[in-house]
Length: 147
Image 1 (cartoon, rainbow, N blue to C red):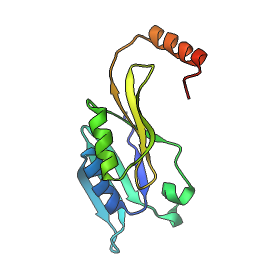
Image 2 (image 1 turned 90 degrees about the horizontal axis):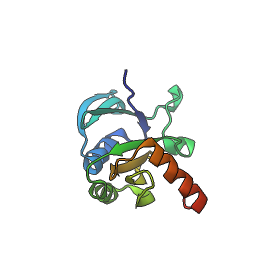
Image 3 (image 1 turned 60 degrees about the vertical axis):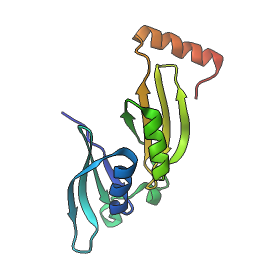
């Protein structure tokens, strides 16, 4: 079993180009209608697939812009989160949470792409046990430093 995100975007051609520039994706499949709208595309990010298409409101496929936001974050774990974060910003992403070292051993931040999808970028800086994770979580709550 696997889970593959399927992103609905306004202007899939531009989204594919953005994801290539921001995250280094490669295009695997593009199926366009006669009028040029992308009905289905698949891009690759390392071994992971991401599917996307233009919005088709009459079929119930609406972009985040059409519905006023998104409730999902796509998480990318990378070796050098600082470099990828800056690359995505340079490509046009907006920072929604600056990069920070976190209680759970990650360094992470979040971005919103120009198409309204939220991306959580992270690097694992420290491997910790579940017990240590729980201890740090409780400490964070007591100190009031969490979100």
